[in-house]
Image (cartoon, rainbow, N blue to C red; front, side, top):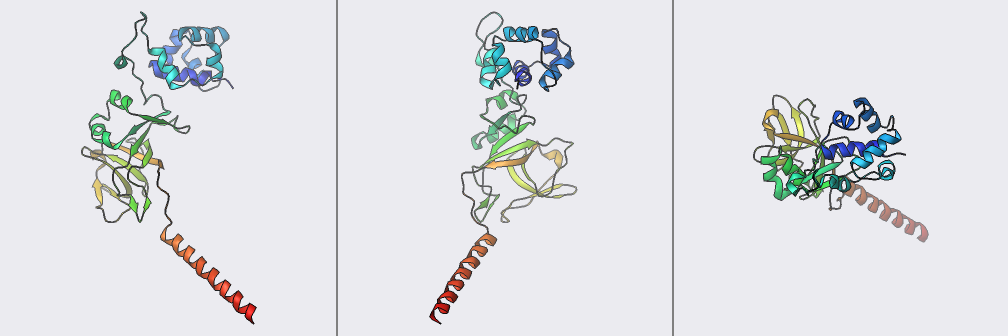
Length: 262
């Protein structure tokens, strides 16, 4: 299957071009570019050759290989005059390249609060790439603290949370885990009630309940998945079932021995 549609979309993102800009560059209709990117049609061979020549890549690569971010990044390394651009001039917009998930580590949290709208800062963050995040704006946050850990279960300190952006018009869901960005901290909490204010709790009942108005939150991110190096400990229910199974096994063996003696 041809990769041309995905490659055109990635090239536009790196070059910061709209579909209209791309269409004008190659004398195309804007809807045609959208059709290429959605896989509904493909460029004619002469258009394909023009695209390949303009971006200095092979037609074979455009058609058969899904170009990586690093490969596309190199397209912008030189200006029109052939002079190498400085690193600060070549900005890779990770929020436009949806398959890139910027990672906010613990030591960057204070800076993230201040600079969460600064694209240069977001682009400077390390990033993950997941096959299921290409159509969403995502963030990954490292957990700082043990508030969501209870009896060695749940979310642990230094776990990585993969999150989807929550927009102002999006409904919040009771029971769901969120990363909350406020003007003084980044917190991981579970939504427990929606009333005049939003009520958030931790999974460990020893920590305080928090109340926020939605406007007081700089950003809200919905936790979709998490990565942990901790083995999941059995819950109390699981431990009781295991104990009952062991007792039942012991009882059956005892009855078998009595039956053999009789």
